[in-house]
Length: 254
Ligand SMILES: NC(=O)c1ccc[n+]([C@@H]2O[C@H](COP(=O)([O-])OP(=O)(O)OC[C@H]3O[C@@H](n4cnc5c(N)ncnc54)[C@H](O)[C@@H]3O)[C@@H](O)[C@H]2O)c1
Image (cartoon, rainbow, N blue to C red; front, side, top):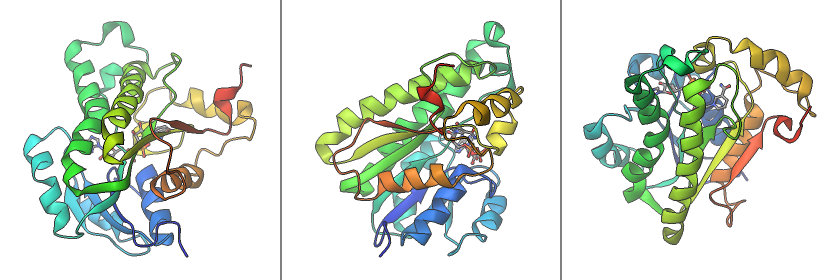
């Protein structure tokens, strides 16, 4: 018996086999789920990476800033599955000028791109998949603790604060439809998105030393397990929540 036996998931955000979404797709399949992936831009690359999953899933195109692609998403997903029980939002991006210590000089144009892709897209993806979601289904996203200001994270931190608030609003608007909406707040993991943040090494040095449980920068499994648990039937009365998978770092003050 798997945690996700009979469940159908839409997983966004795979670009390499180091993507958090890849670890979620793998663990979800191991737990019995049928998975459909979305890919952004380099579709042939995503298709190649998808072949490394236990059961290579179909890949459909989705740029979360493209209204036409969002509008046709439900229909394109229906070509593969007749509905969805879970949706993973594992998407984030900010222009280089919005990160790495340039906070005071970032233009609105660059901030708005970060917020469009990393924050508003959570609501956009939820609405695009809503026709496929029945009561009991779940939407899960990924955040990086936005309750404090971090070094170098800059406008991505502001975008994540917005994402955490969007999570609460989505939970309150979709709760009456029986749809749960939750975030996993992960510690730093070595992925393509992480490498694009100038100064990311600062997190890499402090996290493993300060987290009470320790922290492995290359172990995506704990984060993937939390995402899968939230999309399973194990959290039927939990929504608008942010579950930390960070080795306990957020609970320390030293
Ligand atoms: N790596 C970390 O340390 C860490 C920690 C906490 C939270 N997160 C979050 O996890 C999520 C996944 O990131 P990751 O670390 O696995 O990196 P990643 O680079 O593997 O994934 C980011 C994904 O966002 C996608 N994307 C970017 N712009 C898009 C667009 N316009 N439309 C659709 N997709 C788009 C990329 O194609 C990529 O697949 C992000 O929300 C990130 O902020 C990451």
